[in-house]
Image (cartoon, rainbow, N blue to C red; front, top):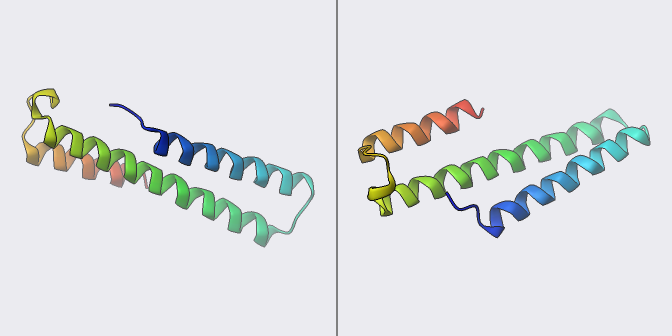
Length: 87
Protein backbone atom coordinates (compact mmCIF):
# COMPACT_ATOMS: atom_id res chain seq x y z
CA UNK A 1 0.00 0.00 0.00
CA UNK A 2 1.16 3.51 -0.75
CA UNK A 3 0.99 5.86 2.24
CA UNK A 4 0.31 9.35 0.90
CA UNK A 5 1.45 12.69 2.26
CA UNK A 6 -1.94 13.31 3.90
CA UNK A 7 -1.50 10.21 6.07
CA UNK A 8 2.09 11.08 6.94
CA UNK A 9 1.20 14.68 7.77
CA UNK A 10 -1.51 13.49 10.15
CA UNK A 11 1.06 11.43 12.00
CA UNK A 12 3.49 14.33 12.13
CA UNK A 13 0.77 16.48 13.72
CA UNK A 14 0.07 13.73 16.24
CA UNK A 15 3.77 13.52 16.98
CA UNK A 16 3.72 17.26 17.68
CA UNK A 17 0.72 16.81 19.96
CA UNK A 18 2.52 14.11 21.93
CA UNK A 19 5.59 16.32 22.31
CA UNK A 20 3.30 19.07 23.53
CA UNK A 21 1.80 16.73 26.10
CA UNK A 22 5.24 15.75 27.36
CA UNK A 23 6.11 19.44 27.65
CA UNK A 24 2.87 20.02 29.58
CA UNK A 25 3.84 17.22 31.97
CA UNK A 26 7.32 18.67 32.42
CA UNK A 27 5.70 22.00 33.23
CA UNK A 28 3.38 20.19 35.66
CA UNK A 29 0.20 21.42 33.99
CA UNK A 30 -3.08 20.35 35.51
CA UNK A 31 -4.44 16.86 34.93
CA UNK A 32 -7.52 18.05 33.02
CA UNK A 33 -5.42 19.82 30.37
CA UNK A 34 -3.14 16.82 29.90
CA UNK A 35 -6.06 14.39 29.63
CA UNK A 36 -7.80 16.68 27.14
CA UNK A 37 -4.72 16.67 24.92
CA UNK A 38 -4.25 12.91 25.30
CA UNK A 39 -7.86 12.40 24.26
CA UNK A 40 -7.37 14.66 21.23
CA UNK A 41 -4.27 12.67 20.26
CA UNK A 42 -6.13 9.39 20.58
CA UNK A 43 -8.97 10.72 18.42
CA UNK A 44 -6.46 11.85 15.80
CA UNK A 45 -4.85 8.38 15.82
CA UNK A 46 -8.26 6.71 15.48
CA UNK A 47 -9.10 8.90 12.50
CA UNK A 48 -5.75 8.15 10.90
CA UNK A 49 -6.35 4.42 11.35
CA UNK A 50 -9.77 4.83 9.70
CA UNK A 51 -8.23 6.75 6.80
CA UNK A 52 -5.57 4.10 6.22
CA UNK A 53 -8.00 1.19 6.46
CA UNK A 54 -10.54 2.83 4.15
CA UNK A 55 -7.86 3.83 1.63
CA UNK A 56 -6.55 0.28 1.60
CA UNK A 57 -10.05 -1.12 1.16
CA UNK A 58 -10.77 1.24 -1.74
CA UNK A 59 -7.46 0.29 -3.34
CA UNK A 60 -8.25 -3.42 -2.99
CA UNK A 61 -11.73 -3.05 -4.48
CA UNK A 62 -10.53 -0.87 -7.36
CA UNK A 63 -7.56 -3.15 -8.08
CA UNK A 64 -8.82 -6.66 -7.32
CA UNK A 65 -5.80 -8.22 -9.04
CA UNK A 66 -3.70 -7.10 -6.05
CA UNK A 67 -6.19 -8.34 -3.43
CA UNK A 68 -4.59 -11.75 -2.84
CA UNK A 69 -7.60 -13.62 -4.26
CA UNK A 70 -10.03 -12.39 -1.61
CA UNK A 71 -13.68 -11.68 -2.28
CA UNK A 72 -15.04 -8.20 -1.71
CA UNK A 73 -16.92 -9.54 1.31
CA UNK A 74 -13.70 -10.94 2.79
CA UNK A 75 -11.95 -7.62 2.22
CA UNK A 76 -14.82 -5.74 3.90
CA UNK A 77 -14.76 -8.10 6.89
CA UNK A 78 -11.00 -7.72 7.18
CA UNK A 79 -11.30 -3.92 7.12
CA UNK A 80 -14.02 -3.99 9.77
CA UNK A 81 -11.94 -6.31 11.95
CA UNK A 82 -8.97 -3.96 11.66
CA UNK A 83 -11.11 -1.05 12.78
CA UNK A 84 -12.58 -3.03 15.69
CA UNK A 85 -9.17 -4.30 16.73
CA UNK A 86 -7.80 -0.75 16.78
CA UNK A 87 -10.26 0.20 19.53
